[in-house]
Length: 279
Image (tube, rainbow, N blue to C red; front, side, top):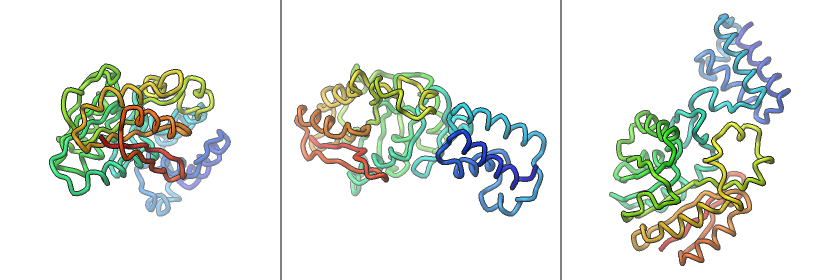
């Protein structure tokens, strides 16, 4: 089987498995098993795959057929210009979350030596992205689960961000709330249990602890707005990523906790993905 034949066969099988981005994923998989860039795939279209590469491709396609996440299969994923190790036990970085980074960096523009707190850090992609872009920032990242924290530790090394400090702790119990920060950011668990059945099949393989946000999906927003408001310096900002149709409810939570200048930021699909306010 040549590289070209493998690519076409991969596309067909992914499409048959009802993978929406089957063309994109086929390229990612062929790159993974061959080590070729997109340009090299074209140049080596008639190169034959080794037996090992063919067996690896078969194994990957079997995993994708049951909708095991491509990111877990590849073991890493790109986010905001960085590369992140991911696997079972940690939430997969998503492009939607880059909207939060944009809002954070816009707020921090022109500020130096700032302190930032990232709550429910997971893979560390938010904390690390901010730390990469703001070298003078002192970033603290809180995560409750040791398995996720191990990924964050590795990702800090990969992205060479020694200005990120990891804290093992429970956000619902106010971990790391005893300091003052210029900025607090969070992409907390926000899916209600009633909506788990309508998420993509891949989500079933991600840790529920990183997804479920209480009966109405808003438990973490309430706790963070209430418990961390006093951890912000005067004029400091709190930025949340929110789920679809949660924007107005989270805005109301911020209003109840007397946040000011509350606003929304849309993601690339035109959905209000980020809610933020100042104290």
